Length: 295
Image (cartoon, rainbow, N blue to C red; front, side):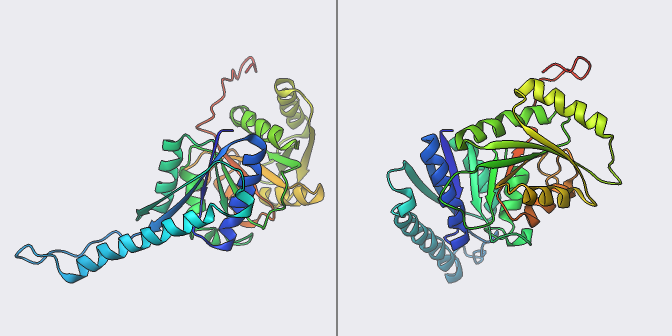
């Protein structure tokens, strides 16, 4: 882990993500880049027929500069936050009519290893920081996204639930989850949930998980769980074992579509009482031979 991007809108919930990112950065010796996007409407006042811009146009330009200057002052002040002491911190701001694209574009330009975002808490995906921006960031980001829905404890994660169907694509994202767990000195619990409409035999599920063990060392607890809905199963199991992070994969762009269904991932982000680490399955593609089961 070398660089972590932390978007903020200067709200208290946005600092949930910042403070947790600071803990991760301190442990991994990564730098932090704090980023604010000033949302600008996608329109502009037209000039009059003789080519002279009307006063409204001038006022709009002045407003843009004003909010950018204000954001820069807030970012500079934020660098003095106590949780950031002795960390390598840089800041920037940008005016854009597409906040989520500005965030994902910057994460690529910076070659960030992770995006960490705070949220307004479990219960409503549209309440995530910067409106529904976090949900959109998760859809479009090629980088892993860590969403923090509650005020975090000043410590790293200790117990991670990796929720999966353990299909070949899970092999691509698990190394990142495993490395993240290593930074946190966290224990990983492998988890598979079955429902009536997406049922599979326990014997078959065990074989898939045991194949996973062989590839990644086998030092994991695992559970196969039944529930009415997959998101409920993941949340219920996480509560039962007192997990402090859920890790899942996403295909991105189309509603958090991952190896369960697009509704499951969306439900987890909306309803989870603990942080969620979401890793893009397309970015981390496995080298997996379905016939020989060799990675």
